[in-house]
Length: 206
Image 1 (cartoon, one colour):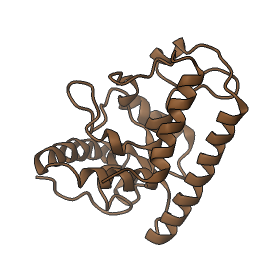
Image 2 (image 1 turned 90 degrees about the vertical axis):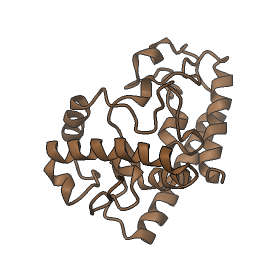
Image 3 (image 1 turned 45 degrees about the vertical axis):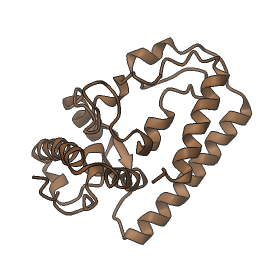
Image 4 (image 1 turned 180 degrees about the horizontal axis):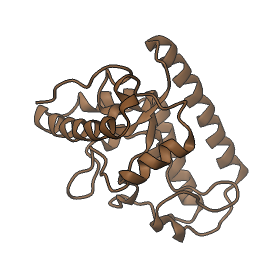
């Protein structure tokens, strides 16, 4: 099973952007600094992670789901409103940041002990594009490793492609949201490891 076309295109875009930066982008395979902490993903990312989980042997899949379930338990204890609605689209930036700071050392449930990703081929879009400088030529809101990104301006072609991919993502999210009848499109990462994590309970992963 291969990743969806949008996810593959985003990975190829990252490689082209990295090449344009003369290969100096510090985000390389084996670095897992941005795999720590709590962040949001979309229902499109959740769908891709679900596809990836189905490719794993039962033991590996259940291990990932157990870690995610433990994080979900901690999240709902800290923010009880997540018990009834997992979507955070209407949360204020301050609310999200408070929870993110509280759980800023959490490893992604798919992070392996050797620092590799257990679902690399099906990783979220944000993981595929993390670290590429924005138009102003710098990275903001990234990990400490990424402060070493050289201030080289990327070509307009690369930025145009980035915007094109963002437009495709928005369209696919809207179509999926309509198909699922979802109340929102963003949720914290641990919930994305469960197909029913919109407004219901997390299934038993024992």
